[in-house]
Image (cartoon, rainbow, N blue to C red):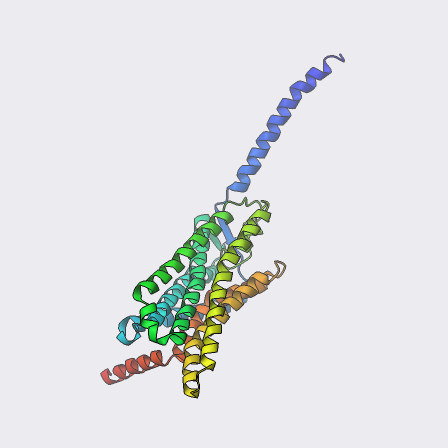
Length: 335
């Protein structure tokens, strides 16, 4: 009998190991299979959803009117056929599209009970938003360089800021945005999602999706941090260095009107940079235990910034104001 016991255990152990292996495979498959997500949105009372819907609708309507109008003005008026307005037209295009990635789905979810988004839809939303927001960062750096050449080397401006260089700068901005978006999206959706399907945000973003993962996030976060440094630091350095040279050049101008004119060409760009980077830094520096603050910051740079950019440039730019006045005068004469 004593000799038979080891045989009994030898027969039982393989069965147990097969069961554990099967259960492990099922657990792995359950973790990897994710057909959709639920966008939790803002944690407010249901009766406030109507107010939020109207707010989002108003902001998105302003984004459409402002950015489409800005692109139309730049394309139709030959006097605005300059490098600065070429960059501004691309900025309006980017603002229009990355806000369109977020706003329509968020407004639909205010009326939807399920608030779900498909896995493919979540991937597309994160990819497109990351693409356009990173592209905007590089484009703002290119616009700072354009202002640096215009103020510090005005006689060589038309030579240095050629059509070819402007096209290359814009294409390079989109290329960097695309590469960054591919890396960020592929890293995020190769994680194992084993927690709740509810994304505590009003759109698919990296940090809320990480909270649903049961994977080891150390390497993922280190790569994300390195990628953010590669994106943010060069653009900020270009902007800061450009404006250091601009300020030193403007202070050398003796004429008060000349100083005001030089600063007025840069004030709009500085306003846009401050709003965008301020909101981005606020969101990423907010601890994970305060998700509502992150949502407010995300709302600022995903919807408020695209709404303010056309207003900032139209209110602070005399060329755009003159074009708008002439268009209004033509309409009045026709009527």
